Image (cartoon, rainbow, N blue to C red; front, side):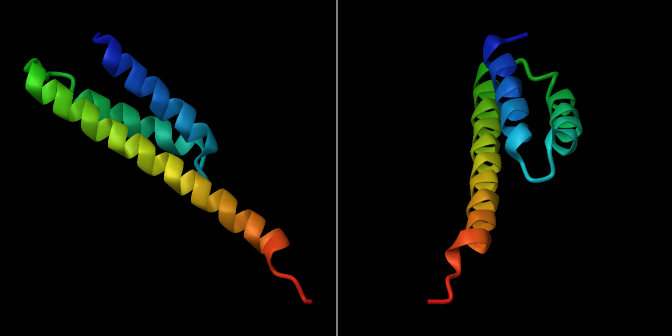
Length: 81
């Protein structure tokens, strides 16, 4: 297995822990996507797939941050002053 692919999978799992629906929601979907792309041998296609995966990791992180922001804003953002 390519080390970049392994690193990408680890990034998905770590980002999944902070995802609002949890790592139990993220892991099966990531695993399915990785198994669909397991037969890629072309180096250019592999780099494109890794870049697309990194994009989705950033999306998961952004959703996690938005969820955290909204939770904090609901708790502390509305003041009656």
